[in-house]
Length: 239
Ligand code: APR
Image (cartoon, rainbow, N blue to C red; front, side, top):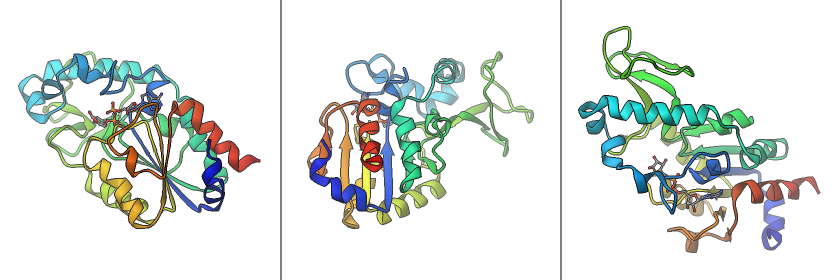
């Protein structure tokens, strides 16, 4: 399935992955859009904006508590593991919209989290920020300073962490191959990363079971799930 660009794959020196919710779907974490997507059953404006958080902190925290419980009970799948294995052969950077930490748990060493992390909790007022894996019994949880804690994720209307975004642009602009996996590419600014790659003449591959907003922009679109296709991709380097 990669035959037409096999040479380019083996010649590549810097591979950047842009990943989205689809790569964790086979670990049992639902995606946001599409048939069984979270935004089918939940209202994004009531759960994933800063206004919603201050209006209904308990509701928002209950939703995040459930998601944290689900995410902590899952394992990286063959897709995440294939990306981490690829580091044996070539320089790999992962730019992920996911907040689940599964790339890191699979062993990837260079992961930039564009939308933050659900594992990390920060204070809405002071500088407190820490990885917390235990469940909160008191909802909403409070910081030692007395203010409300929140998950360190990027909500709609909030800016991406600027250092992470600046580094991501540099990686996208200097890679020779970009592989876009499991994202609908409808959320900005993450969906501009393929444009930066194209400006550097990088080869862009998409792995997704369905067509996306930017499929026509790709040099190659593979229709399939990431846990199935990514190990095939890595096997090219092992032959
Ligand atoms: N393997 C690969 N791709 C898959 C799989 C799979 N097993 N299952 C689903 N997909 C694809 C879907 O076809 C879809 O194109 O993954 C994509 C998931 O798209 P979204 O649900 O829109 O997720 P994402 O692109 O990551 O969303 C971006 O939106 O609400 C926000 O902040 C949230 O980071 C998220 C952002």
